[in-house]
Length: 283
Image (cartoon, rainbow, N blue to C red; front, side):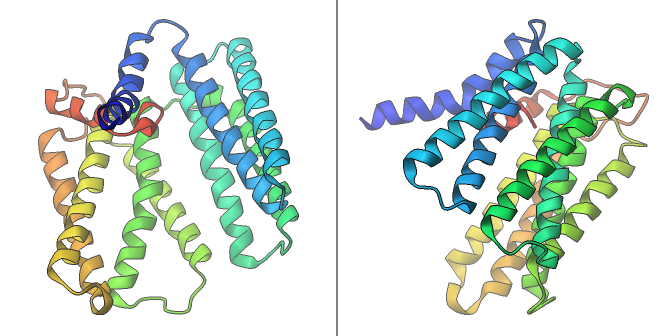
């Protein structure tokens, strides 16, 4: 039984990247957008079910309907629009961050109090941002690596900001959604500016993400092992921050980020980034 479980986990971790690589010339953009749309449909369905206080069976139907609708809709949209892989990833990236920031803004200003209102806001923001992203996509010239770099900025700026806040006792009593929104926008903007000078390969960004993730986890784990958790949250978060810095430094030393106009092959070590969980296939 344990062997079977390990086999399933390995398949989940390793097969999607290999499958994506094998399908490079076979409607990859369509598969990319459809996979992302289906995953986001499931997420929206769960959010709607939770905010609307639905029972298990209605929640399952709502989630299945949204997932199926997104699967069919994104498949047809990619087919109709003849999207390239970079365009498909731009639509995914823009839609996710616009929706997430809209929700964070609502929670920061308490614009909608009831759960159903929040659910409808999420659906509306998702639909509107997806439509706008699809309209803007043909005019955008961003590579897969640049889009991954922007998404990494959007993720790691809030994480490092929260860890820094805990370490230095910053913002006690302040609304967390507002801080997360500001940090996310700062991260997205900073990474977007960096794309003026850098055009990394996607696997280079994934390798940097792996360094940040593994470094942060290692630093935090070291803090938990060495220090009593109940009295040392600041030291533990500080060690996690240091670990993130060390992990990023190691990753960048190993692969670097290609500058615009220069595209040297990334070292083979960058391939290990594809052993990250499923999200690495569409990041």
